[in-house]
Length: 211
Image (cartoon, helix red, strand yellow):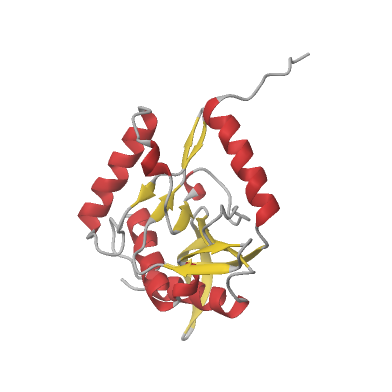
């Protein structure tokens, strides 16, 4: 028989954060598939996802926001700081990728690698684990298509990317095999409408469809 073990450290904090989020958010999730058939070889999936999130935040600012459920106030952000979920044996870390809206692809990859290295070595400052304006979970590197990711207050939205697959897609004159990435967008329905969330997801799909 296994013995009860007290949660400690990161995993204990994760349990508290998730329970708090469950109690304080009114979540709704939208799902769709991003057709990436036009991509050239060598595209960095994470960087393209980030680019599409930035584009969507600029198109629909309502989801790049913080919401205070007690005072019913909303703060729209002019910048895009993306919380990047990093899975470890000790639990989940979410470091903040600052100013994702002004970094080029090389700078984005450098910043992501630095954050991951600091998480794995447990040298990341506490200040880098908060303050993001929207979140991304790229769980598809392991398995799974769609999800209902958890929105952590005060943020309003989180995007989850599932495992890519090929599917038959209707085209003029027949069908083609296209690669798609499943996307799940969970948002706090108190702070954003279904229409805003749908337009946000559409902006992501449109950007990811580009070469």
